[in-house]
Image (cartoon, rainbow, N blue to C red):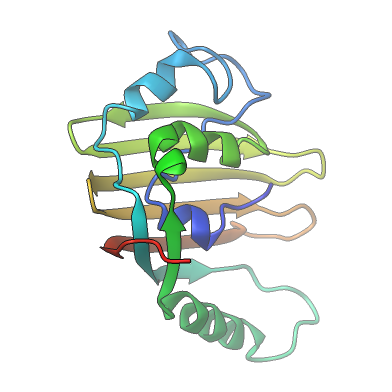
Length: 186
C-alpha cells in the first residue's frame, strides 16, 4: 500500500477515494465518481498561492522486528518526527486549486482501497478507508480535516498489518497544518 506523502497532507485535501475496490453504497466507484467527489467539493476551496505546511507526528508504533538492533525504533521515530516538523512550502496554482479535492483523490487512488465512511459538513471532512495490496499488506486510513479558503488542518491515521510480522503492525497518526503565506513566485 502506498502511503500518502507529506505533500499530499500539505494540501489539506487528503481524501483518497481509491479505485479498484467495491462500489460504495450510493456512490460511483473510483476517484472520478460524482458521489464522494461531489461531497468533497462542497468544502471551502483553497486559494491559489504559496503555502507553508507544518506536520506533527502525534503517534507512532510498530511491532518488534526480530533481529533489529536495540534502539532502532526510537531512532526511527525521532528522525521521522524531526523531518516532519521542518516547515515545507509549496505553490498551489490556480489550476490545481480549481481541481480541489478531486485532484487529491486522483493522486491517492494508487492503491486498492474502498471507503467505509465519508462525511462532509460546511468546512470539515472525515473518512475512513480500507486498503490492501497483492503483497498481503492490509491497512486502514482515517482522515479528519477542517478547511478554510487559506488554511487547513488535517489529521491522518494509518494502521497497517505487515505479512510475517506478529502484532498489530505499524500505527501512525500525523497532523498537518497548512496556511497561505503569499503569492507564488517564479
